[in-house]
Length: 349
Image (cartoon, rainbow, N blue to C red; front, side, top):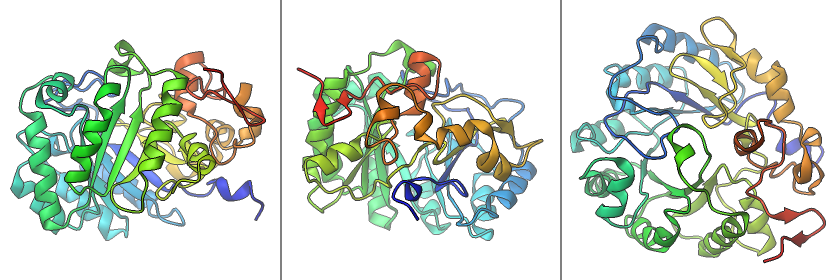
């Protein structure tokens, strides 16, 4: 296998994110799904979910399934879905919202049902800042309690934190909270202007580079492992400064190792890249992932535009295809959040 080929996941995704519902009782300022309190009348049924799992289980190797939303706890059949996936030897994680539905009993039940991990969000270091993002008071305290309970029962937790102009000053304090909570992972999501996030201000390329260099130096081999979402150039930063890149599979990005299925069954490369290549109700999800022109193009960095297509890191990184689409209307364009210039020269200050 060539060096480039090992960064291409053309036969099976590593992770499949299924948006089981868009229903959620929060009103987060940056919500990709623009969630509302009630379920969409056309979301996939339980029977359709079982058929979807049948197909996903034929991937080799089998992908890790992340049940996300909205809020998965708004689905009354959530534990039936978890059981069905596991019966097909699919590992499952769940991304619940910090609402009154996330009780201690539910967390214990998720652990007992064999869920691999849960993800929670912290976008501020205080109740005032975090709750302002979530649209409801009490979500900050509920998140801290949920993380502590999960740790107590041995259920790994990933904490997701938005990186945007509005959160920059809080990041060091949030890291302190995350470290004290003993979570397994801290994932920094660099804002994509989709959904409600269109109204928020992204960081500049220079600021993004500074944040990534800072978090790369936090990697001491102890928890939490720090990763990024929609910022694959973190891999370049980690290797450039000699940091520890554990937890970041090279090459994984929208459509390459990642597959997203919407609440109504649309098959897309990622939740932040709303380009449907098919629908699970009428298309074979395995064939779409392997053969749809959109997915094939996203797995070929030689066809990327601008700096991304010429960069020596194009296979291992490849840039955020979702951000390229949000910024230029072209998922193959360069990622404007990256300030790196091929040839080893960074953007001037």
